[in-house]
Structure formats: structure tokens, C-alpha cells
Image 1 (cartoon, rainbow, N blue to C red):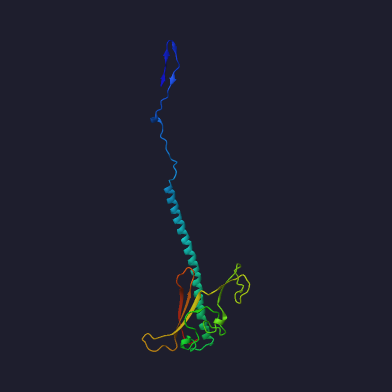
Image 2 (cartoon, one colour):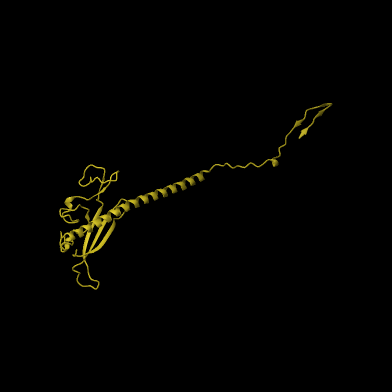
Amino acid sequence: MAHLQKRGPELLEATVKAESNTALRPPIKRTQQGFSLIEVMISMAILVIGLLSLLSVFGIAMAATQTSQENATAKQLANEALEGILTARETANIGWTQLNNTGSGGIFLPGFNPIWNPGLDGIIDTADDAASGFQTLELPGPNGIFANNCSPPAAGPDTCLPLTNFQRQIQILPVIPAGGGPPIATLRQVIITVQYTTPQLRFPKQYVLSTFISPYR
């Protein structure tokens, strides 16, 4: 608002005072605001929980991959033992009486035994296997081709893994008829159990293969 001051015949200069009208000013919006310390801590806690969950998923996936490989090896070892028994029967290397556990007059060791290489008789899990040393799993080198440098041990690209964490049991049992009575003389049950351990497992895991065998080729 302007005010004129007059002193006598002279007109003095006017002083102008601007009055601000806050009602006409547009409101100032505070859109840029910082985070409080509590909000930052909560965000960090959520991030840490998410990362830990992701790491646990990776751990489970790696353990499942290793267990799958070990289970495939156990299956192979069980089939190998069964094929050895059938081959011995087919080639008449052993008779029907010998095709039994040692406690029943046969040649196959009872209980769980290490995975040895076959002995001089060429039959798995018999008394002469221990002198042949541990069986080794051979994995091909970077080129994907087997160099056969594990048996006998020699320098080469293949990876040699001794099967020291595996054990195998061969049970040969008589078969009792469904209605009872004496065992069937020309039929026996063969149960092959391969047991193995891994760092991820608290208890041993087993693979079981069961079948029947007769003296007939």
C-alpha cells in the first residue's frame, strides 16, 4: 500500500510497502523426504532374510544333485553284483550249493562289506576280494573320453573316485511256499543292499535290489 507524505507545498516521495498475501500463494508440496533409521533397518532385515532363503535353496539343490549321483552309483553297484551272480551260474563257475552265503555252505560273504574289486575267482563279495583293493569309480576327463588311468592307477586326465563311502550286502535266502512247508529246493531269493553315506546325510542311505534265482540256466 502506498502512502504520500506532504509537508507544506512540497510533495515528498512515496514509500511503498508490499503486503504479502499468503492466501494467494500456491501450497508447497514436500515430495522429497528421507528415510528414517527404523525404515532402513527394517529394509536391511528383509533383504538379509531373502538372501539367506536363497542360499538355503542353493544348498538344497547341490545336496540333491550329489545324492542323485550317489544313488545312481549305488544302483550300478547292485546291478553289478547281480550280474556277477548270474554270470557265475551261467558259466558253471559255481554250483547251486555254492550259490549261497558262507553260513549256509556258499561262497558269498555275509553282512555289509566294502566295495572291493573281484578277486582271483572273478566273483564279487567273496573271501578273496579284499586282496584286490577298493573298487574305483572312473569319470572321464575334460575331453569326455575315458583314458582308463584308474585301474591300474596311472597319470591321466580321468578322475578316480575310490568307493570308500559305499558298502554292499548280498543275502541269499530260501524261499518258503505260501502255504508253509519246507523251502523250495530249486529257488532262492537274492537281496542286494548297497549302503552309502554323504556329508549332507545324517544317516546312511540304502538302495535295495531283490530278485529270485534258480539253478536252471
